[in-house]
Image (tube, rainbow, N blue to C red; front, side, top):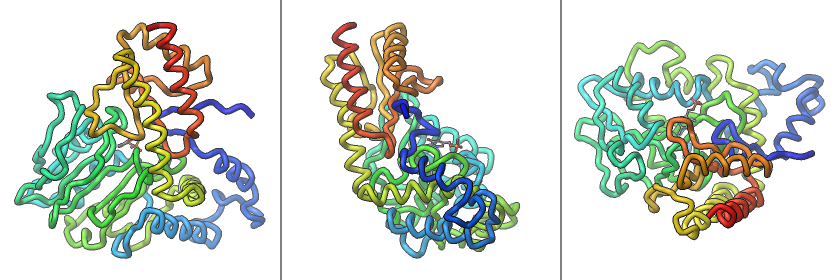
Length: 361
Ligand SMILES: *Cc1c(COP(=O)(O)O)cnc(C)c1O
């Protein structure tokens, strides 16, 4: 077996043990005579696995009992609309922190639904920095304050979070879910597509404080109504079963590898290997992100010219490394080093970067 080194931003690398377990169980799930993706979502086979998955999430993320946990379809993208539909009340505003591409998409959907106050707009600095979390206070008539904990395309990540007191804090955590311990009790809602850090694409994880449902707008269509999903424990309609199964297996892998603390250590080690290489390159590699907010998941960097970047990419491909091209909207290079990516792969990339600099510097 020869697997490539996978630096894709999403869908992205999964632990090889998880893929092997899926292969082994896909036809005959634990001797039950059928696959879990052929079983009813109202039956024991699926529901037992589902409960285990939710229990694992609760313990690994330290999610208090007063939070619902469920999975929806439609990607993180559907949440850009669902959040304002549910929580942006008439006569109030929602505070948005425009930190990059993903928060921007959420902002533009919210504007179609209600009044948005752009609390912070990083456009002028080209989304290379964030506000100081201590300085963030929501507007007086705010329904919620929205932020994206890790901007996957810009490579910028909140290290600590604002304390918004009585105003619910809502966060898109798609690309740093379970990469570190997070004070869940600070948030009214946390959500994220699972395909970056937690499993195969298809499910969006929703973590919702129960009292949020008392603040909802009335008369929402069924699928768009969080309270219906909460009431039915995420089984109002068919959940994304394959994806949830993958998440459950990834969670077991995370647990075996030290939980959220273990993932945080891995992320620090891996991202430091690359950032140190950039910082010690005397400008050969450049990162424009404010050092205080450097992402430990998506490391964006540039070379002196696009031509040099093309040559660099060609070298990485030759070495069996995939996914290092930056997002098409920003160009440059990006190494995504999610939970499951082995440290050795990151070290191999750093070695290649040094060698490339030696021969092209
Ligand atoms: C990938 C990503 C999204 C979009 O997720 P989909 O599941 O494709 O809708 C949203 N937010 C962030 C931070 C992301 O990384």
